[in-house]
Image 1 (spheres, one colour):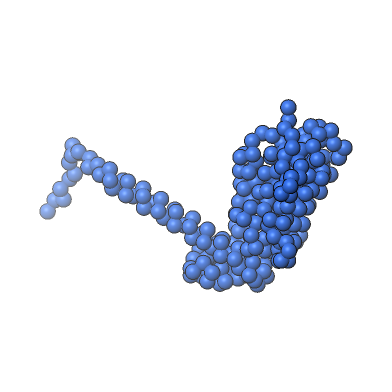
Image 2 (cartoon, rainbow, N blue to C red):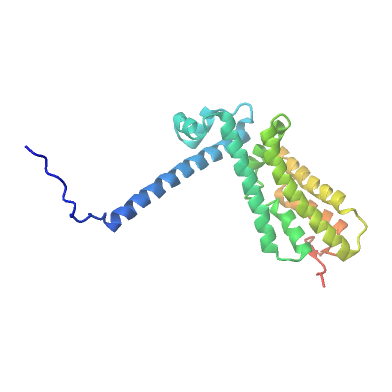
Length: 241
């Protein structure tokens, strides 16, 4: 029996448009699901670092915290080190995006931008106990881990340069006598120190009192740009002509 040959002239059968859309939707769904799983695991890693510290955090802890199987953790990250690097990368990106957004919303006035940059450090989104504890866990390991140093260093370099630039402009506006790079380092070090105080959990140190302390420093260093009113809130006193 001869096998029928295909008809060369037969018209090509097109896939229905809704079938194409369904396939595209399924692909997007799989991609979203993968990203969601990764994010679940990263958030669970932050929780574990805050609860157990760096050394005692395990892949099993992360899986249990995320409510996922241990095989899922291995599938997405392969090792504890890769999971931790991804977590630090996420936190560094989140921090960078946060302060850059704060600057964008502040407008072009240097005093407004500096105020917003300082205030952003005490926003609950990034300044909360679990994330502060996770940052401290990574900082404790950074000295012996070049990858961590690179991730933290890249964040610090860009952030620090913004402080230097703002201090330089404000110095000229207010005719201050400080050295901009030295003052910028002092300001960023003050913010880091306040984060450490918050991490220690002293009852008298809160996000609000920490921001108040930072604002007090701004009012003292830039008296022509920030003043104290009767409520104790620091406000910008002048604008650039």
